[in-house]
Structures are given as C-alpha cells and as structure tokens.
Image 1 (spheres, rainbow, N blue to C red):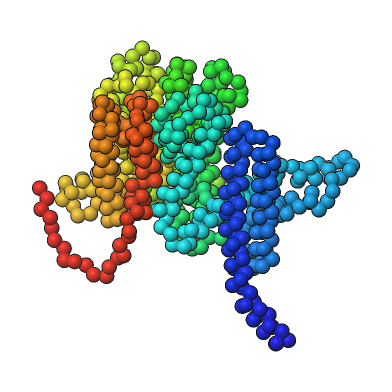
Image 2: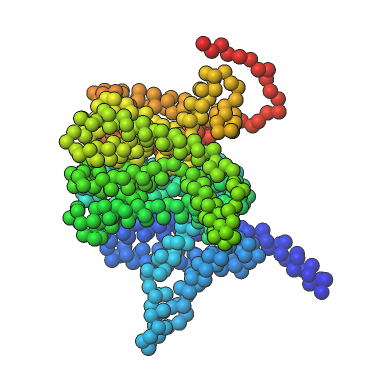
Length: 609
C-alpha cells in the first residue's frame, strides 16, 4: 500500500506541471474564443450577410462552444479541488447549463409533442446557445482582466487601457452600417464613442438624425459602462460569478470603489449596481409620466426615450435623442417635471456612490431604531454619533452651495435675457436646471451662445469644479476643491493643521487635492494653447469653454464641436479620456513610482511672498 501511495505521489508531481501548462494553453484559447464570439455577434448584427458568411459564423459559434466545453471539462477533471475553491455557485450553474447543450447532440429529436419536445428544441435553439456563450465569454474576459491585477500590474494603467479598449470597440460598433443612417467618418465615430464612454456629451453630429435605433442602443450601453466604470463591472462579475480573486485583486478593487473593508467589498459592488438600476428605473418611470402623450410618440418610443434620458442623466452623460438636446421646442413648455427629474438624476449620479452607500446606512439605522421602538415601546436614547461621515458632509454642503449660488446667479443674469418670455415657474426651473447641468451633465435647455458673458463664466467655474469623487461626474471634484479652500483658509488663519467638523484632514488628502487642481489648470492651458493654433479663427472663450467641458466630462459647447477640424477633434477626444480616467490615475499609470526611502533630507524653507 505504501508503494502504491508513493507511486501516486510521484505521478502527481510528475504530471502536475504538464497539467498546468495544458490548462494555461486552454485558458488562452478560451480568451481568444471569447473575443472571436463577441466579434462574430457584432459582425452578424452590424452588416447584411450572405448565405456563405452566415454559414461561416455558425461554424465559428460551434467552434467556440466546443472550446468552452473542453475548458470546463478539463478544469473539473484535472484540477477539481482548485476549481471547487475558485468557482462560486453561479459559476457551477453556468457550467451545468453549458453541459445541457449536449442533450440535443446525445438524444434525437422527440417524435411526440409535449414538454420534452419543447425543452429539446429550446436547448437546441440558437438563442439559448448564443446567449449562454456570450455570458460565459463576458465572464471569462472579466475574470482575465481582474487576474491581471494579481500579477502586480499597475492598476491605474489597467484602468486607462480598459477605458481605451471600450472606446475603440464602441467606435467600431458605431461605424457599422446598421448603426447609422448614412454612415459616419472614423473621426466622428471615435469622438462620439469617447464622449459616450467618458460620459461627456460632446458630439460632432446630430445624434437624433445620424444614428439608428441600433446606434442609440450602442451609445446608451457605452454610457452605462463608462458611468459605472469598466473595472467596477468586471470586478463585480469576476468576484460574484467566478470568485477566484487574490487578496491583492481585492485590495486594488477596494481602493477603486472606496470600500471600507475586504469583507464588504462584494456588497459595495452590489450596492453600486443596485443603486444604479433602482435610481435609473425610478427616473425612467418619472420621465415617462412627464412626457406621456405629449411628444406624439408610440408607447414603445416613449419608454425608449425615458430609459435613454434616465441613464444619460444619472451617468451625467448629457446625450439626448432630441434635436437641439432638451432645448427642443417639444419639451420647452409644460415639461417642468421632466427638467426637475433629469436634474435630480444628475445630482444623485454626481454626488458619488460612497455618499449613496452612506445614505443607505443612515436609512437602515433609523429603520432599525423605529422597529425597536415599536417592538419594545421604549425609545433608544443611545444615538449613534457621526452618522454622516466627513466625505458625505463635505460633498453635500459643497453641492448645495454650488447649486444655490449657480441657480441664483443664472436667474439674475438671464431673467430678462435667454429666459425672457417664460412664466416665472419656468424661469426658476430652467435656472436650476442650467445650474445643475454644468456640473458635468451636458444637457441644455437654452442655446448656450445666447447666454451672457457673466453666465458663461459661472458655467466655466461650475464645469471646472464638477461633482463628487467616485461618481459618474467629472471635474476636479468638489472634494478636492473643498480641501484646497480649507487649506487656503488654514494658511490665512496661520494654523498648521487643516480642521473641519471636528476632524483633521490628512496630509495625503491635501497633497493630492493640490496636485489635482494644479494639474487640471496645467492641462487646460496646454490644450487651449494648442487648439488656438489649430483653430486660429475661433474666439478664445469658445476654445476655453470646449476644453473645460471636455476635461470635466460635461458636454456643454458653444456650438463649436461640429466645426472643429479632425486634429482638434482628436485632441478634444484625448482631453475627454484624460478627464474620465482622472489626471492623478493617468499619471500614476505613466510615471514610474519611486519607492519610499528610509532616510529624510534636512528640511528647508522656500521664500513665499
């Protein structure tokens, strides 16, 4: 018996390296098959196909199906213990559904009518096969992307490359014949895809007349992916379905989504997706009620309009299916609730997911206290302190102040200007709406070229500040702006520490905030200077407005975007990409990081003032 065990142990040590090599090759082949399947599906639905091309696609789908079967079978049979640890329950369910596709291969089609025949036909149908393979392909690619983090790859670089990959894929999809009415140039396609993924809203073409329904679906999917964040989606699917993530993976993703601990990481990702779907769903219903029976659309058209604008608003994208955006005459009168709903969606998307999670904790805390009061008939006198964390307080106060000042300023400057002739209620509604939109949404209800210089300056400031960190908004962020202002106040008062709400701000927060503001101003100067050379006949105000709008992922424009040359469009696309990924994140991915040293140089002072 001992000799037998020694033989098995020796055999295991001998074969294990070859098994790992084999599984590695199969995994690489599976990644290639996943990409090929997605490309095949896009090609099938984007181009008119001949009979031979359809036959080739069917061969591709069958090949991918065989590769997935081989991959799952080899992992289960050769490395069952590791696979059992890595796979979550849903991954096992998907594997079982994949094996069910073998039923029509093993068993002939039942001759008698009934439930068995329907099940056999469903398992044999293209819809079941293709949908299952697409889900498995997406999960496989998500898992591969997250596993890159386990190789100590720079997370900032992966984030930037992920956004770039989605942009290129989106640009390719928008160039498909079925996505546009009369075609689109590759520069305009790349610009639109970048604007959608970076949730900006700047477009060089009229969205409503250029893109078909398929094109609008592609745009709204790009907006949703860009709004949530590529790494948020891929990390969620990799952890929730596959479960094979290392501690390093989880630490990196935790920092990306601002989770409090590793134990709450998956729940944080679930909250982010849950908040998004719930808020967008409520927004869709509210928008539908506000436009039902007023735009001359069918029920399907109204629901599509409501869904598109709800997603676009919550993700702070600013895309609209109406010519002239929300300044279209069809919605300018008797649609105040539409503008209020869109404004609230923009605010909720722009304050940041950590604040929404904090709101959830506060609501649950009060519900538990209320339930305890009902159950015991005694009021709990021990209240939890600091229900609102410091980040929530700063974001809410800054957001309120910016919206209040912006609304009052725009109302004052445009009351007898662009708002002339409107009822009083409409004037205040549009003043509020136009104070919300510069904070990285990009919708507009009036022609921005009709606004006064003072209002445009207010727009520039609101666009540059932007929304909250870890949100769908852009800009330098209200968090960073508040820290810079608090640091300035501390300097003027001669205090060494920056304190607010009984808390001392960390040195790292102050450094990063100052760096963000300085880098933002530096990048804006470089791009405005470059565009002034490429567009010599354009006023500097229009160029500055365009650049701040792009960097802050706002989407507002003084009607300049369609008139830019191709080189300028590419530069503005790059600016949108920089604004969405984040200046600090992008530089961390590019600049080689210096290791912390054990020693310190003697300190010295630089003469200031």
